[in-house]
Length: 477
Ligand code: UDP
Image 1 (tube, rainbow, N blue to C red):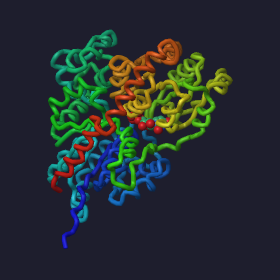
Image 2: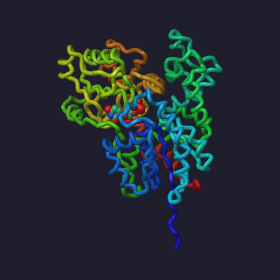
Image 3: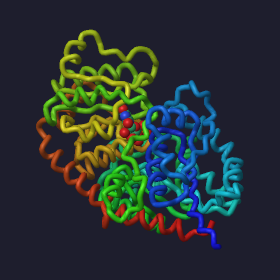
Image 4: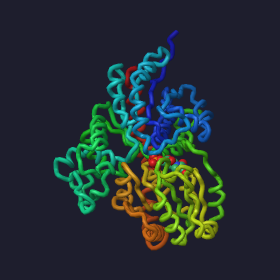
């Protein structure tokens, strides 16, 4: 009797950081739902937290062919993991990847069809190549940020880089094709802000990005109508490109599609590594419609005390209601992030502060009018899908470009990049909640509709995800 063919087996390998794991786990879940066998490489630190806070045990045991492979990220479990620790984690993971892949690829019961590797772990391409396994790169950043990094050599050649000091920051950058009308030096990824072109981080990011061309294909968590001109440019260098975002928006539409296998459906659950404080939802339930600005700077951004204080005053002085996520490790110097004494009454009256919120649910809440964000790509996409205008305060890396897309490409909000001053915070919050509220809300509504269309049956991202699954099925393990 013939044994039934085993499904293709995909190893999904994210960098061990909340934003990266979040979107790659969502993709892994969608692939599992389509019947693919998945091994998801997860750091012990993140895995424990997902078990505790995102109920992944229940969610993933429902997929019998889904396994987690747990690795160390090189730091003790009780060590903090902010943006400062990225390189330590990266270097450690690099040092163990060869052996890790050899072990996974040699397992006789689970032959490996391909690896979907985080696009900043490009060393995977070499190690997997030695084992004869193809790698598809997944970049968790916007198409615009990826493309700007890819164009760094071109920017240097044309003289757009280096940036010549503070007085040069508003100069228009012309050598990032597809974004010529949008970018100033100020909007380039933060590691471009160096006078010395041999700067280690700049060199590193450039090399990693250029290396991506050696992957079999490229996946981006974006959609064609969101970043059309840039995506067209990327296609010229990456003909095998799958734009499949916003990934978190597929869950609902795939769930309601009648042609899907059963069970289990992909879950719309968040992949949160912090304990969610749901008291903010009860608080939101008591607020008038569209009256609240939601404030969050993501999972790793740390603020200095001065910026922190400016935000407190700016929010209170705006007179608006606000819900602010202040993580226990939000303050760069450590110490207390308590409300300044003189603002306590005002905050108690119209503010709510939690350590971690169920962000997607918050953004879809009727009481929330707008989002003050650090412009991380996941947060940006979540706001796009929820149709909420944004005030952007980008912190580092790709966030500088994302905030420019918000303010100048999509026109769904305001960018307060490089300024953290209470009057600016107040003005920006009142801009999106007051004077320009209708204009921004209408544009954000249009964008949300486009995102829904892209991830619904017949939409571009829906079709590209199907194509990705079919292409994986056609690969020989
Ligand atoms: N997030 C959340 N609750 C919070 C703050 C953030 O669930 O209180 C989630 C948010 O929904 C997003 C992720 O954390 O999916 C942050 O990712 P992003 O790419 O925006 O920023 P990063 O944390 O990588 O800087």
